Image 1: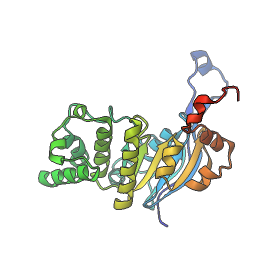
Image 2: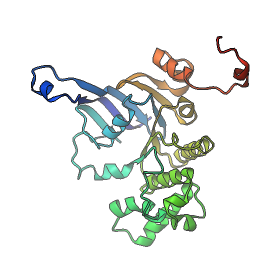
Image 3: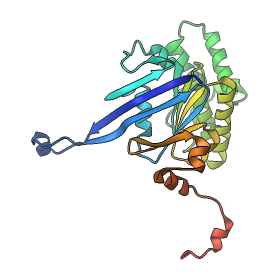
Amino acid sequence: MDEILQVDNLKKYFPVKKTLREIFSLANKQYIKAVDNVSFRVEKGKVFVLAGESGSGKTTLARLILRAIEADSGRIIFNGEDITTKTDKELRNFRTKVQMVYQDPYTSLNPRMKIMDIVMEPLNIHNKKSPKTERKEKVFRSLEDVRLKPVEEIAEKFPHMLSGGQRQRVALARSLVLTPKLIIADEPVSMLDVSVRAEILDLMKSLKDRLQISCLYITHDLSTSRYIGDEIAIMHAGKILEAGAIDQVLLHPVHPYTQALIDAISEPDPDNLHRDQTD
């Protein structure tokens, strides 16, 4: 199957801040290896899960792929084209085809803008020559795609008038309005109520199947990753420790760190209330 994204041997090291005396000394520099020789592939129409605890390098890797920060070495190939060294002007088309959904639906939306303007903003940047009526129709279509109805009423509201789940749907609508080929979702449900998480994951899964959009899903929660993912890579200290089909990795883990992450998943069991804590 064709690949939408190919990451080869990507590296990003950050120098450790030192005191003034250490800076002028001849001691060797120390680095934090945020992303350390990472390689993986995302197939078209599939969800690739990047899982690991906080500080493992997942978000830094996402920012490298988006070219928000520059890699020290390695290659990023999107839809068959090497974008590693392209200029901002050359990346214009790439940035319409790759969209980001952030973790916090409360800070990722401008509180002073109506939902119509928030979702239309990418169109105003990349498709500003198209008629406003056409842009409005695309906004309404995106709001319908994420099941926010009635769309005309929702479009006139401000973010503070919506629930957390509705705000994350708006963020999804904004990412869909340019009909991207790849969505990078960075912990998109971690700040939502448990009751809302399943709805958002179900929505993302249906959008992926219906619109054939690929997804890089970043999470620390293996229980949600198994529901939505096709492939998974387990990341720790900037490295990928284990990767493969999601059921294979989660049901038959090879690396001890993967097993530790699986063991950390809480399983509701009423018998635990009566179990002796010394067992």
